[in-house]
Length: 580
DNA sequence: GCCGTTTTCGGCCCGACTGTTTTCAGTCG
Image (cartoon, rainbow, N blue to C red; front, side):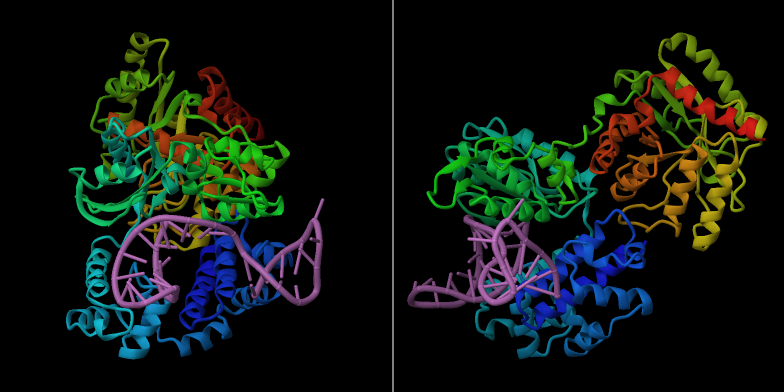
């Protein structure tokens, strides 16, 4: 999957063109193409091989030729030319918030600055303020932003940003001027990582709301404060933006501030094609100026001939078409989940007993939990020897009668060894009701070897679920090299389910691949990988990934009642036995 | 550079805030 790589080179072209002062629509065309390719469910390479690049919206003859050259040669002559015209560090100047192409180019041309370090030096020596259009405030802002960039070069995990935003909503919602308030932006779309936290409020006195927000005790610094918008830095160094609108504009504002950008642009174009104009203030008749909808989000969509759609799928990847045709999916909901199929206890590296974890699951309304402690190879996590595992199974036997009708499932997270063998003998695996297999070592193996290793593990008749299929940790490590397309095809064929791991730093599979898995007929499980009772809450993040992937209740195994779930796993064993 | 249920040319989403300016450009989302 080279989509990210291809998107990256198109984005670089866009940046360089922008720095050279090119037509902004041409720049936008490259950016748009990059976004399209980045979020495409299929591999750009296979689309290119099929000769269908130009059928992708936003890709015309010129960009198709450059992508084609890139895929064939790993380079682009056009990009090389641009790189010679703009020194490499100048592009980096664009990463400073507040510095756009115009100021970056001005600073580069006038002062010869090509790196962030030189920029900082020039700001400290007050050389920037000698340039036209830059004075003391801009210079200070650049210094502040440079400092923040060092602190905060990474995007926030959803699991950090969402609780922080919900805390602010709790603090603000009883303010007398506030009518409604909720998270918006990428947070409402439940994107896996978040740039800035966006919150939307409605009020007859919006200025009071932005001021109250700027005065919250968690605010460390006020970055901007106006009558309808405020932007602050919290004591945890999170940037939060609050917009306050009139109550009758709440729906259109919520629609607008939820995005994403591509969805909004497409939606506004639909409005234009109907002689209407859409902004955060409402949907207007272009000729009369009459406001047709604005109070509720669903009113906007309905007035445009569309069904309302959940924020998670607003990415302009087919949802507008589906909404027009009335074929939107009925996305899986958290209430549909009946159990968690990857949970650890203190038998290996968890912090709580099996009973405590089971009780916590019961409180969540689940009917079952698979206690999947690590297998023997994972020494660092106190993986269980076969003897210890058997002891654990006896404990579960004793526990279940007391918890009935709730069921603790006998299970393990079994390492796929470097040669593809599973880390327990088959007769022991046969005693387990749920066998989760995963990779925890040998990340440095090459792509073919790791892929082969996983495919070999699928041959084992006792394997049920492939956990965290890429091994990535968001903001920390990229995951091992693996041919997921091949893995998913093999999983579909072998009847192996694939996990969406809801742990906020994993979210693995991601939404793009989960959607691909569905297309290939792979069953999904959404698990938390909880190592403590509180971690069980991560189910909401896993469900969010599934929703972003357009998954429905029927795609998710752990929405099944226990007997049907066990029957599914049992069928695989029977089928494999007959085949043998 | 891309695109077309009026268009193969002439458009391209829309508005708020900031800073440096006396009316607006740049940036952001």
